[in-house]
Image (tube, rainbow, N blue to C red; front, side, top):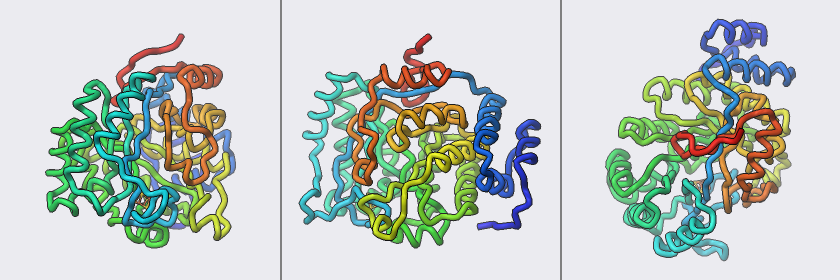
Length: 369
Ligand code: SF4
């Protein structure tokens, strides 16, 4: 990872934004070290509009599914995973999952299923492929955004197949896109501290690179607010930007604030990120990631009132109705797990923006005046 003496200022960043120039490591550090929050918001919003952004703010009607929380990895920031013998461990069959999803769809009409799981060593690749095929057969119009790059890699170790073979089989079964989880922070130092059992970042990139080349769009994330430095945040975002230059398949970036509750970090005295840090991260993401079209203010993490404010800090998407989210809830998330469409519309409108319901691929489904 490159490091350098920090001499940049927000003035230089502003000049580069005005000139449409790409920001570098030094600019990223200047943004993260600035306390001028309102200036950062204004700059990020300006950069977003310079690149063609409008007042439209997107959301999707979606549901979250987790088929198994059994996981072999034991990331230190994770409050979701369980070993098979723990009382709260579960693994749901494809039939049970589909039955539940169909009933839920009939009641709500979601257009997207977002599903991630633990890396369960007690299932085989058919477990995943059959689940996708069954979901797709039962809900053919619902977009299946399923499995992090880590899970895709886990499937290769279960099956002996390559990333490409696994992705091809899942795509043929009905997979539509990949979520962005598993990225955490790419720097080796951080990974060794927070997720020593997780695969090397090169694997994360190889899965996304392969997916993009197969025509499977993906998302990208950063889990911030634990042991990482500002340099490591900038390094992470620059690696994502380079990947996007190569393949262009990232639909959106989602900065994820670390929730320490029910993890070893809570016992070590770690606290939630502050609202100021969350807003700064959104502005930083929008300014640095000049080639990823959408940046999400993830309301399930920051709450809808803060997500609405974040629309003035570079975000143009508030994710979705997110029914039954389990992962942030396990880590102490207090924001509830469902946001009605009317509420999303109310918050976005009150922020002076235009609510647009989208599908997963950012096709417009409905807009509010
Ligand atoms: S973050 Fe994912 S891979 Fe890590 S322990 Fe939790 S479920 Fe397992």
